[in-house]
Amino acid sequence: MTTPNRDTARPINPARQINPARQINPEWIAEIRKIVNPCPYFGLQQMALIDLTWGKSRLEIELENRHLQPFGVVHGGVFASLIDATGFWAVFSKADADVGMTTVELKLNYLAPAVSGKLIGTGRCIQLGRSLGLGEARIENEAGRLLAHGTTTVMIRKEMALPGKVRDIPKFRA
Image 1 (spheres, one colour):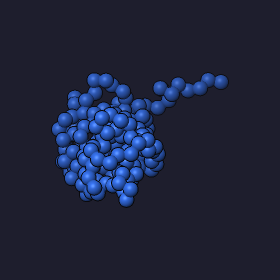
Image 2 (cartoon, rainbow, N blue to C red):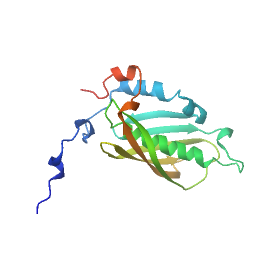
Image 3 (cartoon, helix red, strand yellow):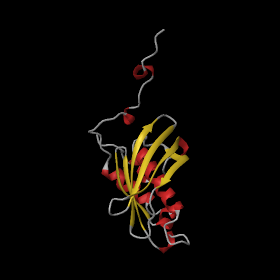
Image 4 (cartoon, rainbow, N blue to C red):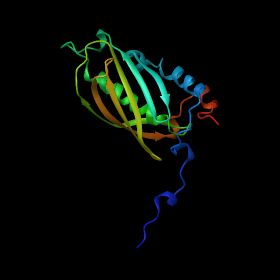
């Protein structure tokens, strides 16, 4: 009995194929940052989308007293939010331009506490399918110490596409 070749069993969306030369349009990235960074939740957390490239993201949180729990260290929910957002945007960078996403699962490990400074989240897209995506995120401090690691699973939803000017800007360079 032969098994079908997975590469020929169904067509692959060219936007999802690995292509080292593929670059996201800087104008599209700038417009995404205009939508994402001022959103209320990012503002509450002092979170910012710093960089977005093919399958990768970088987000940061400048820590303040609002991020601390009663014992004087950063609350675990702050780490969870940064893991989720960092993994999410890494996956989103490879998705079709006309879709949105929502998190359906989040897993993380807290590895070291933080009390001040900056949390730096770096993410990468592990897998992007037709309906689900998997992103991985690491949180480090400014000295490069690993503070947390996690994964986020996102569901792709066509009806959740971002509104506004970003829809009129090509996502990828020709």
